[in-house]
Amino acid sequence: MPDIDIIGINYTNSKIKLGNDKPINFEKDKEITFQIKRKEVKDNFNADFAITLNPTKKQKTDNRIRTSDWLLEIIKNQPNTRKWLNNSLKWLLEDTQYDSIFNLLE
Image (cartoon, rainbow, N blue to C red; front, side, top):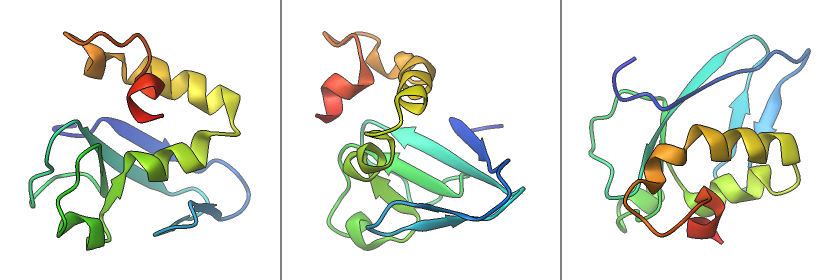
């Protein structure tokens, strides 16, 4: 899928609330998509949500855009998710000094 970096599917038997700040209600058997950006997110992106390291002031109020802090809040106590996400986003670290995505965010 063009410009889609993560696809999440809720295989549980209930709705999941993702995050406390700007929460996403992740309905049972539904799919949500994310685009991950190191730089500014363009206004017209194909994913349901974007996660960026550097949101503009305007983007901080956009309900479709989340920050890296939002993502960290969700995965900080989920080691399997943390491992999966780190492996999935290794491409973001190309040409950087980092060996883990979490080194960029913490």
